[in-house]
Each structure stands twice: as structure tokens, then as C-alpha cells.
Image 1 (cartoon, rainbow, N blue to C red):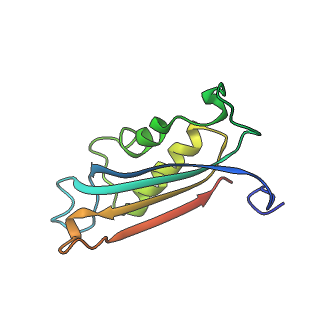
Image 2: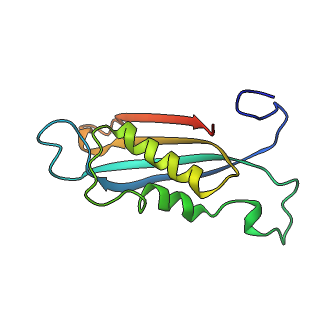
Length: 131
């Protein structure tokens, strides 16, 4: 077994949601701290996989995609200020892990849209294993 409690041969299901645009109060500079900034958020979660997914497999064998959307949008409290976008990513990952014990690993990518001048993507990616 690896540190994360997974064997090299374990099957995994990747659940993902990409390019959610969310306004979040974040930043360290005075011009950033009073208004929410637009962020583009993508979330990927590794889940323990069912032995087989048949035509009548119940949703409990997977995870509802809308849970990821909730973690990236609704679980971020309006008016809550995050100094760093890393803290936003950590908050999303914590929410995903609280939602479902099957979630083993989560990755959150955040792009700060306000920094883009020529369609470049400036931001961070944070990945964590469940501890």
C-alpha cells in the first residue's frame, strides 16, 4: 500500500467539473480586497471505483457531479475574504472530502481572470490526498 492507502492496481474513478466562473473576495492588494474577483475553477476528484457499473447501478456507487459544483460555488461564503487563492482551493478540497468518504484525492485549479491581458491563464493548482 502507498502512503495514500491505495495499491498500484486499485481502480479509480475521476469525477471532474471544469471552468466554473465564480466571483470570490480574494487578494492582498488594496485594489483587490474590496470587490470580488472573477475566478475560473476546475475540480477533479479521484474516487474509489465500483467493481462494475451496470445499467442499473445506483448513484451511491459514484458521486453526484453537482456536489463538485456546490463545493466550488455555493460552499464559498459570500463576503468571506480569502487572502490567497490557495486558501480558496483548500476550502474547496476540504468541502469535497467532507461530502464523501469515497473521495481519495482532489485537485483544484484556479485561474484569476482579472489578471489576463491576452488570454493567458494565471493561477494555481492544488492537489491533496485524503489523510
